[in-house]
Length: 454
Image (tube, rainbow, N blue to C red; front, side, top):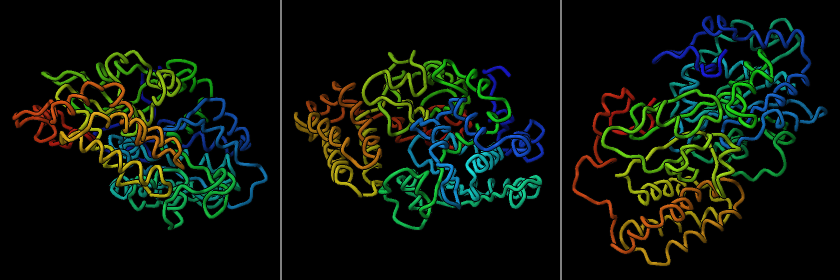
């Protein structure tokens, strides 16, 4: 199949979910059937490792390598967790994936369970995704009725079950170790020492993968590691990737494309470019916890390796593009993001608990026109302190602040010099205070704000 065609979103229809019968007509569950009859678990692990599949939740850690970290002599029971928390602002790819094709994630979880000799899976999902959770539970019932879940799956000795767990609804619950605490009914602090593959859920070996990561596993098992590698744009970007785009573009939405597709191609071709009368100013390439990119980076491939080569602090994240036009105040936008991170911090470590609210206060003063000349330097210093935090939460919070201070220094200084936002005006159509021109024609399902257009 040509790399340009979608795979896990292949049968995508507007407002419809792929049924069990439709999924099986395109080869669904055939990979599971074949491996249960012919493949040893260690061979499945090697195939996933050789495919180069990187975690699609933001960190990009190789899925096969994570699976191989689970020792062969590890105790039982073992667990597989599909992370569908997706609480980061601007990110909604998993929401659409599960709305369209829940069975590919279910099959991926079952295969992961077989490869790692696990007995149970947990589908961890944010509470506001209630409709998605209901669709997933219906798909689980279909899979169970067809013999793909439960005792002696497809006549084999393999047993596996999946439970849906609705999260408490905090951003930190999506951090893998915080997620484990949340599943256990505890405060979601990320303070578990060592690897989850050795001591995870209830002290037992646990594999935590993003939902999109697991969605690719059945295709890799069915078609092979080399096939998957060839889908991507280059050797260090294997496979396809789901990208999402929101903001003042003509076609906000979700796009499955070859991994490593250039930033400019995603915005200009697949998202249709900017709406008439609006110019591209910057974007966050991977949700709220990434650095701003300007138009000079349109040539950069949207993959983990290429983004890391741009410079310090640049990362792909979830591949969720938040596009901002020339009328947007990036100080106000960054303040909004920092307010979110300040509220969502678990408070476990000092840099995050104390540092992020302090950055919020500095940005708030700058936006109000009360910032001092030394405030940008203070913000940079606080961003450096975030490197001493316990987990990656604080580093993600610092990323847009670093980008603002270093790449949009003139805009920050203008706030301080003018003692107000230089973009202030009386236009009632100024986003986000009023509906955007023509947004009702985009059929996003959200006429007022295009931040979650699916």
